[in-house]
Length: 172
Image (tube, rainbow, N blue to C red; front, side, top):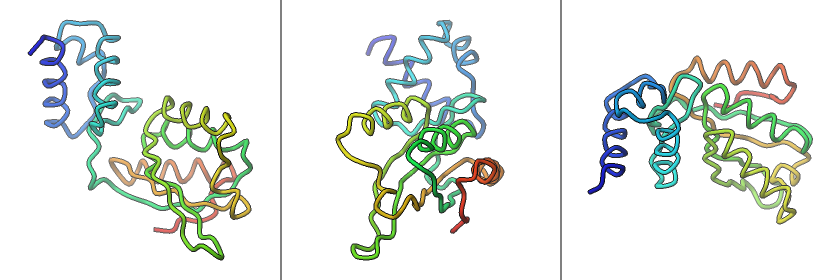
């Protein structure tokens, strides 16, 4: 194996052994590389589908047993980016979006949006005109399943979305 691959394996081992996030700067010191190298390593690990959450406190492996909450939301198309950025900026993950259509029933789509980069990519796809937001089928009403490392994070997301006027109700 080469040094880069070995470092990425070691990063995963460090993340697996921690319950709290570790900063890119701290990882850079451990491996005696620049923080930018760590950012690149994390991006590659995420692309390889390792469940790494980027928070304002650092990096953490996403535990599939994390806290989970479903929120019912509503906003115009112009609010999509703000809604998603609010969620990821506060440290939660948007697992999916779903609507309850009167004819077709529940229509659910996996999203797994974890970062502003994911939001940007999602918005670029919408802006391309390939399709329209799922919420447009139900007059802007939609649900998101969110996960986070703790209930406090989900409470903070819920409060911020309520202040923005997007939150209709907490479902689960």
